[in-house]
Length: 426
Image 1 (tube, rainbow, N blue to C red):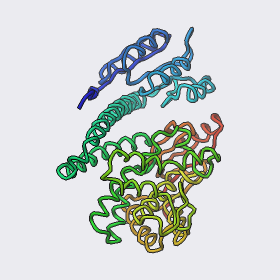
Image 2 (image 1 turned 180 degrees about the horizontal axis):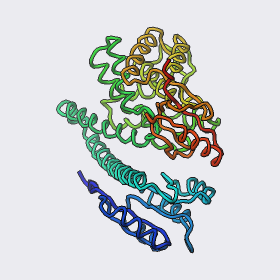
Image 3 (image 1 turned 90 degrees about the horizontal axis):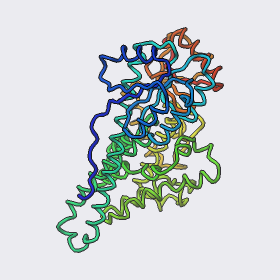
């Protein structure tokens, strides 16, 4: 393979910026025994010059500094070092500046001064890990492009060698499909349930419906690629619920099945899978997209894949204004029975989905505003700010102090906090 990218080595470089030397000294002492490579600067301009010339995993910066402040530094890093993790050190008086940094510098976390040592180390470790995942994903994306280029070259002579190379090509396509599926998951990383969940659920339902093995193989490959048409969408379009899209946004979004199907244009042996991808958001009554097909014109595999995608979108909050609970999603699917999807398919799917969620231990949950939260409740999903900053991780037990912090955060940042929690024991 020509122009094969070089796999990145592990990167643990952390840039620390604070114009107060005692603060830098304190951070260096705290992190001395940690597995980090530290580069400390007492002014943001020197730190930015270092970041421009080096690949950095994490930038940890104070807010208020002369000449160039933390917000300006984070904005530059976000623009030119987008794969790095950005963390802000801030005081309570800097809340307005922190909000500006969240918007402009797309920071991942902010840490109050004086900081909690254990929490700071934990966040830095997570930041280094997240940055390295992004570096790896960028490498995989380049690798996939190189693989696709090679596949296109193979396709130029495919007709002459089709009989001897069909099986070899199919295995190569499968490998490339698996890599693409991994990239899709990374691109849609904020989703609660990912592309692999769609594949597993579609295959489980197909087996329950007693579909033949060759149909299941095709269904699995189509499921791996069903979201590839979204990979080029902006973050704003990806993160906006479908019912909130403008007419222009909806028109653009509705083309993703066509984009997914066209991704297989270089692979004639997968033409039947491309048809499934193109039809997988069509419905029995003609209300689907992109072509508004009716029942007999839609492949059965496409209908099943669309049903599973609908369920996952409901749970991810990608359809309505908020993410639905499992029970609410099941009720919605049942309302679509014989309208969007065949009744027998919906009934079988609901049984499999109940079993899957029960195995995950997530069959029941409640959706509550912060004002109705009580100490002792357990989060069932991660809690984020509207800009995507993680506030609390799932499986966290709420305390009076945590709830008070959430209410204060709600007031300071001027947005409503709603949480998914397990039902209170009777």
